[in-house]
Image 1 (cartoon, rainbow, N blue to C red):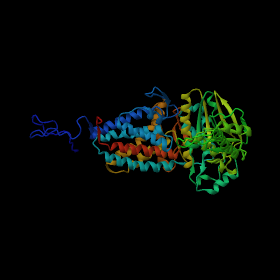
Image 2: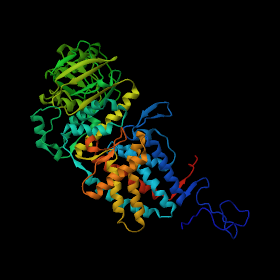
Image 3: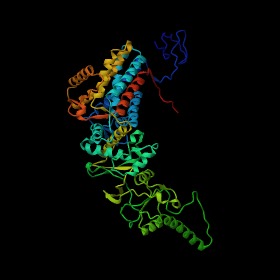
Image 4: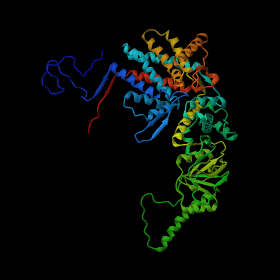
Length: 584
């Protein structure tokens, strides 16, 4: 038994002693912990943790699958979030229970690691804990349960490997179907094809082979194929897909969702600095600067004392000459567009306008980096160090367009751009935010497949296969671990079960039938994958390879690993001490 040092077992003789000091022969309560502290010990702590996990899983449960519901959350500031992205919901929900908090961390980790499967991870982890409850009530030691779970995890990963299917990243149809399964459950599923197309295009645009492949870089530049052209199989090297930095999502309220596009190039919300500058240039030469085109001010306060009136004019002249000199250094290279991250003085604008150069000022650093990737320019820090090679010439068309009330600068038709802007249009801000979240998920899915071109069937197939596999393997497990081992298999069924539940079909009938099919297949051909699962839209049992619902291997593996590991961690907690904060 666990010893407990909060309360003494013997009844103390009542003697007036100072609180907290031993009293008489029976020894009164010795307060080691602060008396305000709440403390849950042993089984009570584990059961309360399990119920907290169950509560979190129940919040999320209805948002799984194509027939999912949305959640509407009000934050303390009065803002409204409408979403069914697991991670997003849990981020907004205010939770006080410590275990529930750690469950929420799960979905965040999943979101950062692979970007999809945030909902499944919570549901699975919750189910693992719920199924551990009977063992704990039967006085099975948590570490035994955890050992069983870990053994099951190893077996589950082996089953996943068996189910996996390797895929060619250039096969557009398969890729489309794959992203479809990620977005199909989301709000934007009406414009599915559009979204999928955009996600694919954006990711394949920014994907580039990492630095250890110099030969590929030559290939890529050498044959400027279409957007979907990939240099000689860059997947032999770990490709670098930086969605966050180079695929910028611009949300502009208004217009139709069908107006969303991925630009072959980029756009930003800036107007030209001078009204006389050209607003449309074909094949522009672009110069990117990060130095100001105005007179340099002193770093700290500088005082100049002038005694002579002529000196004042001389000083103004020197300032003007300085700016003029900078402008002339730039104009010598005959760029058509000058973009700087800092300011452009009126005088410089005047010179540029005279020379027929369009100038933009105060561009964000990140936007400037994207410009450099898209147009092939190099960002120059000083005007006197410009070289011909620093100018970007890959942009096909520069144009200013007015969308709504604002002017936007579009740089389009770049050849082989390595950065892009995703332009989203939609009815309201809420719609745009939700679509952006969905697009993020879709792009992450494509990225995962580009990294690791292996797929698993969706629609609860993989989970069911793991479940049957673990049940069969569980027969061979000896001793007390057998129960928890098989329980992991049962927990896996929660995904097909929830899919069926969200469709509104008879859950018991569907899951039983699915289980029977998988079991029969497993007995006949244990080494071939069985692809029968729940069709999330109709709830019928169908073959997923016909429906074409696939999910990236990395997402599934991460989901299972995270869920089991976190369940193990939560089960091993046997003492929750929550004290009031120290005052003062």
